[in-house]
Structure formats: C-alpha cells, structure tokens
Image: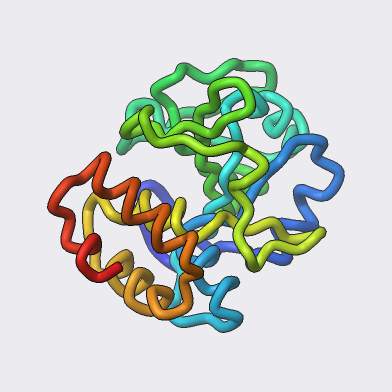
Length: 200
C-alpha cells in the first residue's frame, strides 16, 4: 500500500483489473510499469499503482461500466475532482483515479488517449500515430490486453524518472526489432537528441 498526498494507494493486480473490466465492449490495455513486466514475464520492481489505457471515444462507456465505483478526474492535473456517470470529460483530462468508494484506497488509474478515426494519436505530438488495432503488445492475451512496450516507453521517455529509466533498461534487451524501430522513430520525431535513441 502506497501513501500519496491525494490519498492512499492499494493497487489491484493486472489480473484483477481484467476481472473488473470483463464485459466492457470497448478496448483497453494494461499500461505503465506493469505493461513492461507482463512482457518480461516477471515483476521487476514494486508498482505503486496500476495504469489502464482507454480511448477517449470510449471513456463514458468505461465510466458506465464502473458506475458503482468512486472515480475522480485529474482536472486540473495535480488535483482530483469527482467524475459522475454521464459526464463527458474535457479534452485536457487524461488521468482518472478509481476506488471502490470514498473510504477506500485508490486501486486503478485510467489513462485516456486520443484517436483520429481508426488511429491512436500520441497526445504530445500528433505526428506520431498508429492503428488502434496495433496498440497491443506481444504479452497480450484474450483476457489480459497489454500495451505495446514501444508505446509505453514513448510515454515514459518524457521525464526520465528513476522508475522509467529502470523500465527502459530492463525491457530494452527484449524489444523486438519493430518495437525498437518504432520507438526510435517516434523519439527522433518528438524528442530529437533523446538519450534513449542511441541506446536503441
């Protein structure tokens, strides 16, 4: 259980998230550090939360699916406010924290990504996109969809926090050629001179 200034965290495991999201008619993916570890096939570090990526076009359906949960939008970032069922979130909201009720610990964080038609669009640079159908990583199964590591590492490349660098280093030797090429190309577009480019 992890303490946080916005409340305590007791994140669920990825398999539990799959149970909670079972029956949801829209796509979703395990993201964050767990996406890296699921590709590795082992847990490489402690995870303070559990990230699940959803698409903005589907976010109200996800809210309806979790109607009995207490969900809060990061609006503005760094603060939380309740997200009631039926509300369409503003386009600047990308993070939602989820807990069973107001007295419970946070268990799940929803990351909302944008799309353009059938393409996923990287919110920090719209030149970077790919078919939504190609977002799943090699670790994905019928019951546990996992975000492709090159997409996850692209998000982790911004701040270079200690845990993000650790995730990059642990998964780098295991990246497939297409994943390396995709991440390198994206970094060259969005972050020329990024230190990871030479490492790929």
